[in-house]
Image 1 (cartoon, rainbow, N blue to C red):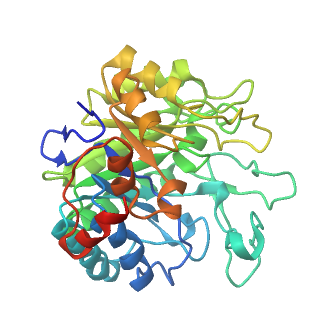
Image 2 (cartoon, rainbow, N blue to C red):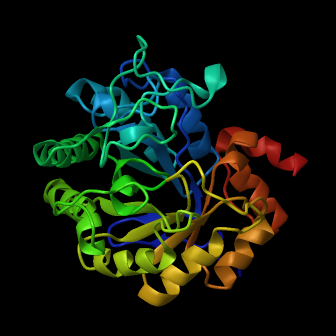
Length: 356
């Protein structure tokens, strides 16, 4: 029996299958507001029966955006259109998640199709960035301003307020983005965090920012499942390691985190990532095996049998896919066909089964 098309039971929610749409930035918002692009982009995955659709990194403050086109949830006015998206996804039987984020020193860049990785600190579409330390991502970037302890406390509250808005919008899953070199990850990595106060130095100090965010966010949750996405390794000597990711997960398991969404990299420009099929799966496997935490695997998972094998080998509990869904928004239908699994299609699309 296929595990990919078995449900995944969480405490308060059930994924109808174990195929998750990974968060993918669209760089198509204005002043953080979602629009019809986001409704159609995310809605198509729901009509295609993905178990969970995770919304792109959504900034908790304006200066936390990667680009000026990122989604935001820093004001109440953002909520109504986001709720429309959530309601539509629910109407199709899928769960809806939101990834709450702050880009830190990797903020204030241009849209990738205009000039990928162009830093815009002094542009009309840019702003002064902040970070755990005054170290830029690239030597040529304008350096971030190191956060004061008061500023850290404020950002923690910004995450809490954003989570409350996400609850109001009806999201099932709230994921804290602690990966890919963004602000929370910047606190983790010794390659970036050179603080000498209680937020730097030891492992316990470097994870303190995330722990305090979780403590505050948890206060506003009702039935939502709280997840954390991590980069399990920095792929750079002297950086964050898988050993530390396991140690962190053991702590998170006891403070209201239900799932670890496992990715890698993004902390430093000199990282060396050996990209190949399943290259991130061993990290999800190790975290799952050593902690018992529900984990998701992501990264160059391109076909149904590959995804099924990961689950059958108990290397992860669900599969997240990004680029595959951009190539085929109804990838779940294709995966079912590849595995000879009969699933219900949206009735409006039933006639299309004849071509599979």
